Image (cartoon, rainbow over all chains, first blue to last red; front, side, top):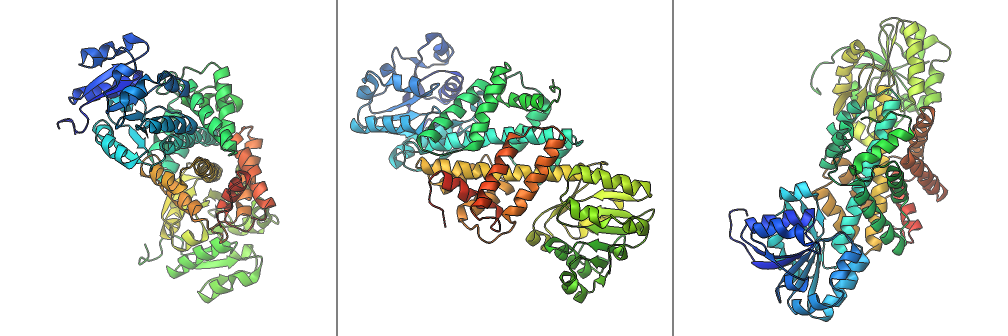
Length: 304
Length: 304
């Protein structure tokens, strides 16, 4: 799509300019879209203004009436606070769509969807599977769920700056549930590979040899190869995804598991693993640094 | 290789004719190899005798002096008992190779390797990654480790009846360690998918939709696709691999983790999960029936 004209809504709002929002908006601006940007901390939007973004002075000011407003913020509370005074809802109006990219609880998604519905607007869940570097390279995946017409309207915009858009049905919470469950599975891979690597090393088999064997055959896929290589590299200090953000996602999953009465013993193990890694001071390291804690508990010297 | 002449050792022994041994020996016989078979329970070898196998009246009688004797038995004790009276060692003699296919502990492998070495023979680890049905279809993978010359000599025979032979170096225990760690990883996939499926279902997202999404992208590999489909099918009664054998492997891993001082919390969770599934009477069901216990704990009706 990179050389094509903007398709669909040509002007829309974006609230929450962190690393992810920054990368996404920059890609849309480069494609010719007009993006109205708002962030609580104003200096973060400056680079985007230089690239042609339109400054919004409040969340509601980012909204194009009847149009789209995207949100990408750190957690449920930050997201809910945007809608606290009702101004965003009012300005968005009927036909307006809130495209919600944050990793949040299904409960908050249902709550917001209901509020939007009351005013004729639509909540569309579209959490991002990716990190700032993959987002910048347009390699992230969007999960989306919500009313079919809204998905149809928003999809071209998401496709223009991503690897793929995977649809998860009509439920306002479905894409968020899938995101939490996907993150859980990825975290279990990091933990299980860390345990397996410690096990083989302590039983005389080099982890690299074991890794080569299983990715040749059983686990010939992106997640195992990528995280396996990362774990073997011993490079945990430069965060691609910070460990304390990993814990944030685990806690969000635990909260949803608690509310939905779903015992998940692997998830509980992961929570304690992250806490132990935080206690060792790895909070701002990459989230794969849980491997160092696995190694420490096994009496193996840190690999770096 | 199926239309080729037998390569390497044309006659060898095979001790332990369970479902796995039965399938392997039948495939070798069909290729023109002469196989001397021994099993403690004699009637199990009858079908192979009809296919041309040579009946051995004792473990030692299965041995071709200076040749190969393969073993495929249920556990460490069964394997060690074959060598108790020393007859197999004596008859195997120098140049003889013991090709050890059972899933056993690294400690037993080291012990046997030492005994073989003392008599000039060689222990070659070659555990099988596969189930009776994949073995019958020559789709299993062999992990092998041991002295290079022995690997070189045995490899063509294993290649003739398998999908691939993956080499794990010189250590007599290395291939067994890799097998235990691989089984651990596969068991973590079954558990983590079961937990994730229960989580998404209880949060309003159909597990099938979630499965389609993650295998499209994050987990586009054999183990996730195969086990995910199996879990969604709800077919747990017909065992491809019995749950109590799954527990046997988990216990073997726990024993090796204990001896090597490797804390593995996921492995401990798996142990308790298998015990709970056994307590529900799923011992002779497929090992994926742990999903029923995950569902029961979450208050979900059994899917069958």
